[in-house]
Image 1: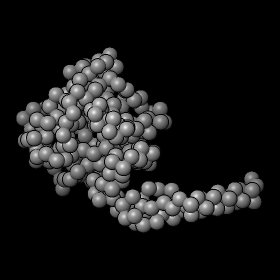
Image 2: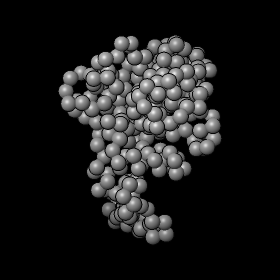
Image 3: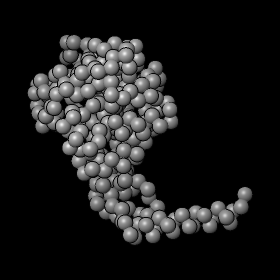
Image 4: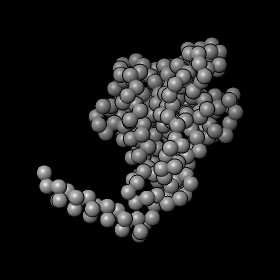
Length: 249
């Protein structure tokens, strides 16, 4: 092993990063402070430490962090068995995560999918609950919203998660036929009405008999994921679960 050659290579690589950072300084997506040229993340170290992975107790159905028990209060009160077997998320939707997702979705930065998708993949590959699932299906966007944004954030995240060939992404099997209002702007009851009948299966053959993980950026009440799971089950999916980057609490 040529130690001198390796050392020189690292030096030149770090010098190049330093030079590029002078021309195009990188800032933290949350606090807007400068990011050190050797830090390749999208958040500074201080904000990165504020991210909270979901661990400990969480609802077995919706994945919401709780103090104890098996299910949160709303899931205990459900009278109808959900079509989505369970929902899991990598992180709590706190302020640094909110800033990262906002920049990704609304400030036209599709390249952020690389980092965010890798964060999701690291969590997903260690979760044994998904061991029987081989397919990913990103939550579709309505045509109008897709045209405005220019990309489907869930689609890009699914592609990054599947890069290691552990999963196959199901493309264009389901469309969003209803241009719904943003769920975050509505109350609990309005969200159910808003999302009802929003999806349609175009290619049931790609869905039938498969165990599918729905991929999205944020889970709030879970109504969107449940409505999509209902559509997939109706089209013949064997089992449907969901995995999101973040979870509102």
